[in-house]
Image 1 (cartoon, rainbow, N blue to C red):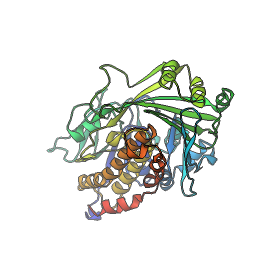
Image 2 (image 1 turned 60 degrees about the vertical axis):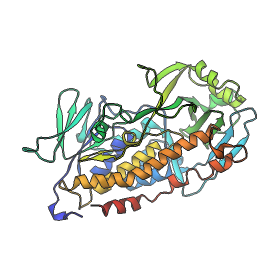
Image 3 (image 1 turned 180 degrees about the vertical axis):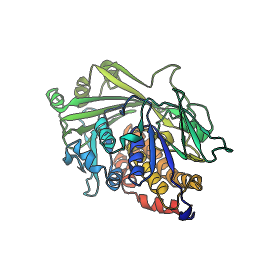
Image 4 (image 1 turned 90 degrees about the vertical axis):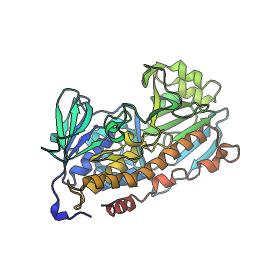
Length: 424
């Protein structure tokens, strides 16, 4: 490790003010480090309806002292073990498997905007900069300002920092610096469309929906498709995500047609056509979706990055390991990234002189973990869709669902931090 007596204050720039960027900013600021957050939009905001915070991420929120603020923006009773029920999406809606609840597996399901608002409430407002769309990251002139980076913005302005952290999502600009590639490098269409919407539970029940989803999330499974329903706002609102996937081509082999938007509103009838012939509860559910449904072309990081860091630049969240959403674990992985980065950068042995080694240590411990969750999310989608894996065969599907969250929710993050600390 470096001599702590040689430490100089680190000046850190975070590109991207979503969940991961703000979580990292809060953790770093509460560790006493100087942080500036640059957000492309005119204000902090999140696209999407709901967010799931699993037990692993809940522990991080406790550690950085923001869990109480999060719970203020939802029903505090939302923090509880929830379990999960898996049903056939076809006629009869047979209960296939009920994931057991454990008292040490408290999680939160809530509106994404409310979760982001909790983070905004605790970040230092003096550190936030809006309408700052990053277009490039470069190195400062080594003769006049060695070990400095320059963040370039679309408005022509720049910002200098010792460290740049890219939390700018799946379309990350900062990633181009890390991989040395063109815009869009390592981004692939995940062969999956997701239709999203919110439905009042009273409306759903009035339409004849019989499955009890007031307190426990559920998945309706079937050939090449599945629907996730998650109660939020004390069970009064049901967050719906209906997935339709292709398995005849590998991820990365085909993209969307040129010019196609990743997110667009489509007629509800398109979604109903996708699920034609499914059971009565699925039909009732889809009848209650908004007339215009938000359709997302899910993109992922593929092939995986060889490193999450290069020099004094590092990536976190979707910028590093955007994954399929089938385990609801993507946000949690980004929150874990933020926590590990904050612990390492705020360590007394981390200095401006050795920060490249610090960031590489972060990458070395986070890549295996996040990539493991990426691959598990892919397998889980196949399982839900009855496709292509031995565990999806009749009679063994339950084994494929059993313990699928165990390695994600019960992970010793401090072991990774301790390991990383031995690397610098």
